[in-house]
Length: 385
Image 1 (tube, rainbow, N blue to C red):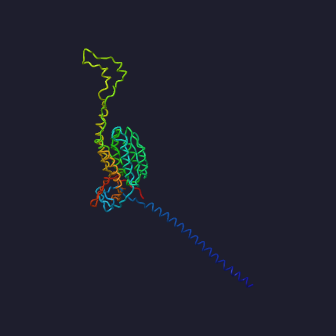
Image 2: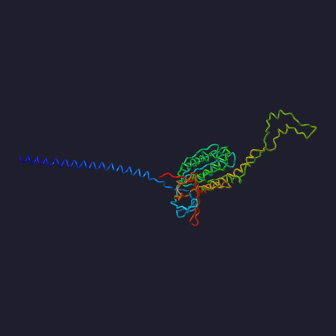
């Protein structure tokens, strides 16, 4: 009897305990769920705040040539529109180089595929292994004969096997396509190397001038290896040649009567004159074309040199074939002496007017250090990071 009462009493005691434990469990579960919900709300709010608080990190990147292999921010002084700027960083980054090879020789017989090939091969072989190269040929058509690659041996093979001659030169269109292709490469250390005499068969002089003007705003450094000075030093084909036969059809000559009068020796027989093979033939078109070409090349030489200087590049004007090949190697070493220098402009890019051009001056602070850079850039607002 007592035993049964004891069990009943124990059962009455355990029921409130179970209820208390269940209540505690439910309370803790509710708190946990609330905590998760609050965390999700806070996280979403923080994400929203981050989106709202995004600000653009403005930075100007310019390629700078330096005569020393060791360059630091303290070695440079930069002025933008005459105002001193604080240099943030100096970096070595691989170059992206597009070779534009002009192989159209109708206007200038000295511009040969063989020489252009040797110059391009010498240039490519002297680049650093990490530099990326693409090759585009310009003649009667524009063709990308080697796409972007760091495999220089493959690029050289493409140059040797795919570069072809052409009668015409579409240089203007070639420049436009080259710039479009280069703008797909990472900004900062992009180079366009032009091997040409600057002539264009399409005679679109005004458009060519406009293209070269626009190239100063692309952030691309332009280098030129020119045929113009070479032309004055190499023997050019004569405009006259021995006449091997009459230009009058033979059947027409045979049908003509003799006009010689034995009584008057001063009267020549036209039939005999037309059958004679002596004398010379003169290419009148070549005479006028050559005189015009010299003036045109002199003008293009000046314009391409100004374009190279404006963008921080160099124009090479070799006088001999060997000199042209050697200067191609110098051009490669010039490109590999470039640094990318960055600074945050004191006048925000976001405040720039459309097409606003800002002048640049990069000056060496260290004695004996030579530096060179582009003369300016077009300020464009940058996207938030």
